[in-house]
Length: 67
Image (cartoon, rainbow, N blue to C red; front, side):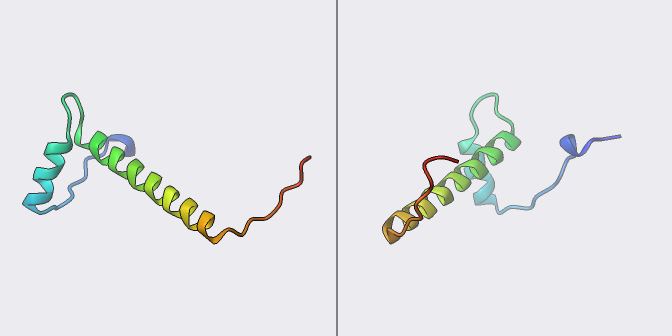
């Protein structure tokens, strides 16, 4: 029985996408490693963008000093 952790999935991509993923891949990395890295980078970028949007808005709620 194959666990979900190690299940193989096929994801159709264009040839140009496949070539770009190959260029991003470093020695010893799996394609899963590359994809996980891209997901983390995307999540980090979203967080930065959201933080920037909030900072530009300039409206903050004051938090109590003691919780």
